[in-house]
Length: 594
Image (cartoon, rainbow, N blue to C red):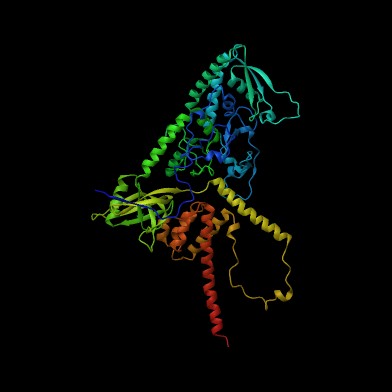
C-alpha cells in the first residue's frame, strides 16, 4: 500500500501568480473601455451576477459598441487583434516603419513595426504579430448575417426608431457654450438595428451615447422586436465561441500571432507538446504566462462572452476551479533528485536505487515524464534537500537490465518551480508551476532598450571627448603595461552579437582541442547551435563551470539574459587563461632581477 507524506515546500515564493489566477477577466461589459488593470480580475472573484448580462432594450448601444472599431467608429472590417488585446480594422492599422536595435529573432516580418494607437498601451508592435483575428472575423460575419435576416422586417413602416446622438458635454453633465446640432435620424428597425445602421454609415462615434424613441409602433412591440433579434443573434454567434482544443466556451481567450484563438490554459497544453498552432500549423511565437498584464486576453471576445453568456461563464469558471482544486489535492509529478538538466537538451541516467526504479516504472506506464532537480546540502532537517527550480524530462528510450536497473535517455521539456511537495514510497512527489520566458515582443523591447542606452552613451562621448594626452604621458617609457584584457560590455551588445560571440569562442576552443569539447561530448549534445534560444542550454551542458552558476539559467526569463550569463563565463575563462601565463612571466622576471 502506498503512503504519502506531505510537506509545504520551503522554497521562496514565486513572483509569478499561481496557475489558477487571472484566467478570465470578469469586468463589467463595457466594450474595450476597460483598461489592462481592470481586465486582470482573478478567476477567484468572478462576476456571476445576472446584471452582467446585456439586455436588448437597456443595452442596445453597448451591444453595437462590441462590434464597432474604436479608430474609424464603423463596424469592424477584417479585424486585427493586437498583442495588447485590442482589436481594430485592418485598414486602421498605423503605417509600419523599420524597427531599430532588433537582432533576435529578426525575421523579415518582425523588422517592421508600428506604435500602438491606444493610449493605455503605446508599445511598439511587430507587424508579424498582427494577423487577421479568425474567430472575431467569423463572429462579425455571423452578426452581419443576423442583421441581413431581419432587414426585410426592419424595412416595414411599423418598425422604425428615431435615434439621436447625445452631446458628449450633456452626457457628462457639463454645460457647453457650443451650439451644435445633434445628429438625428429615423431608421428602420428597433434600437439595435438603428444603432447598427448609424455605425455602418460612420455617423456614430464609438464613445457616443444615443436616445431612442419608437416611430409608428407601440413601445412594447419595438421592445419585443429588439429582444427577438438579440436572442437570435446570440444563438448564431454562440457557435463561433468554442475553443478548438477543449471544445467548450472560451475561458480567458487569447489570440495567437497567427490569428487563431484558444483558452489561455489550452495554449499552455499546446506549448507543452509543440510550438505549432493546431489549426494552421504555423509557429506560435506567443508565450502564455498566467499574468494577463503581460499577455492580455482578446478584450473584444472577453467583453462579448461576459455580456452575452455571463451565466455560462460562471458555470465554466466554477468547473475549472473545482478541477484545479482536485488536481492540487494530490501530488502528480514525481521528482528525481540528482543533477542539473536543461530544456531541449538530452540527459542519460543510470537508475539503480529501488525507490527510483519504482518511480521510473510508473512514469513509463503513465505519460513518460518526471521532474529533475539538483540536490543540495541543508543545515536543518526541515529544509528540503533539493533546489526549487528544475526541468521536466520526457523519457525517449529506456533499457531494462535483468536485476531491475535501467538506462534512460531523456530530453528536457520545460522548466518548473516546486510549490509543494511530499513523499510517495520513498521518492518525492510535487506540485509544480511552469517557468515561462517573456514574450518575443518583450524580448525585442528589452534588446532595443539596452542598445538605445548604448547609443545615448556614444552621443554623450562625442559631445564631451576626453582631453588629448601629452607626449610625456604617451611615451613608451612611462606607459604601464596592461594588466587586464580590454573590457567587453555585454550589456550593450545586440542579441545576435552575443550568440556570435559565444559560437566563435566554441569554435576557437574546438580548434585548440580543449578537454571539455571531446568527440564523445559532441556526439551526445550535437554541434554548437547558432540559435540564440538554444545556445545557452547547450553551452551550459558542455562548459566547465560550477552547478551554482549553471543553475542561474533556470531562473531567467529571457533569451538575452541567458546569453549574457553564458558570455560572462567566456569572458572570465578568457581572463583566467590570459592572466595565468602573464603572472608566470612577471614572477620569472622578478626572480631574475638583481
